Length: 551
Image 1 (tube, rainbow, N blue to C red):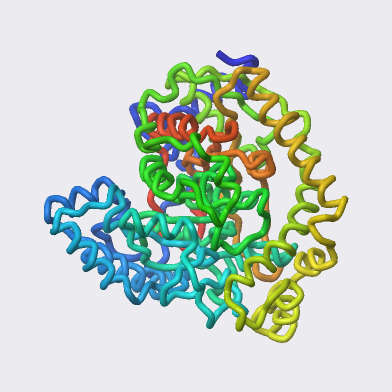
Image 2 (cartoon, one colour):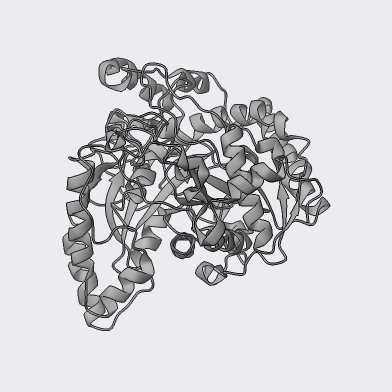
């Protein structure tokens, strides 16, 4: 049931729902029918068919178990794919560097398998890491900045240690919005001084969003099996939305942040970016858990599911109470149309929709959140830079600002460092201004925000559009951000999952499920139910531009 009627009339709804009649996915309906499908919109360098395209963990494990493939063979195929798609062909620029030891590691994992030692579901599975996550190996950890190149991290990040223990193969580091998009207020997402501009595999002139830009583009294009991104506010959810992925932003503390270049210790988290809910759930299970180097993970004790993949129930929506956060329907009328289809699919699959629900504090979050981020950035970077060793030349945010000024031609050809400068002006974390802003964030987003609305309506989750389709990349003017729904969960430190919901002009659009702290298992259940009911994901076709009428 719904507390209010749909906002579109029956004839319009019938037309829209034509896209799911007969079992077709949301993305195949009339919203795409008007778009030209001529070869003029296809990139001339579109890559050839790839034998691992869209394959997930279960399929690849079956191939290795049955002797039809191996960890080495998977690594070789993905490395060839990276060469063909990322460094030539469409030229996505999503990969900063590949692991020079990947094949040797794969051989060792294959030897373990032959000896009867199987570490788990990720044994031999190639994983791509955003390049703000430390790896104590031959690869760099740079956050996209030239300042951090040349001095590799001295210790694996907490989540990397867990991945290695689970038998995952760290195949490559991915490009990102430099410094996770906290350097400038006029940045272009997906650009870094180290890697250049990442391109969207759905339409090469379109943006990837950020800051986990390279992970999103690479996983969408099947350059690896699984991907890890990081988020402070939208940096997993938004690029996943714009590249047809499932992205999970966990509760802060479920996944260790040790060894991750920080913005905000109260909001930062790492999480999966994958092509399916089941793969994302499997990856989350591997990286979740306590870490003595991250005190926030102590709160996860007793709250981690034994097996997140076991939550993938096709009937997961039956009886679920889901609130529709129409205040967050802010990405335009065409996205709203896709959402109406998505809401109908939720209802048809057995969910009870409470439509709408109101979050009274929603518009009060931006100012205190920004204040908290600036304070925590300055303090967090100083702590992180100390982990790079006593001989590392940059010890503070002030040092990084100076580096950018001295290397402005390479670091700041398109946009500056206004946010770095504002953060540098902040005091310490003992400042009353900081504590006031932090307390306000927690009150508005938790007690008077998500906790209140979920309890008031007895909801399992809220839903809203994840954001807009990808905008055209513009290094001259910066991003053209249209809308999103990540801030409430981000400020609260609570989980959210985006799942593909449909397509507009060849570009993906997602729906986000948001819940209470530590509700990842429930959100995965709901997201999987929606995914199975709609089958909305479409693989990228490396078009030159969006499929617009008349092109």
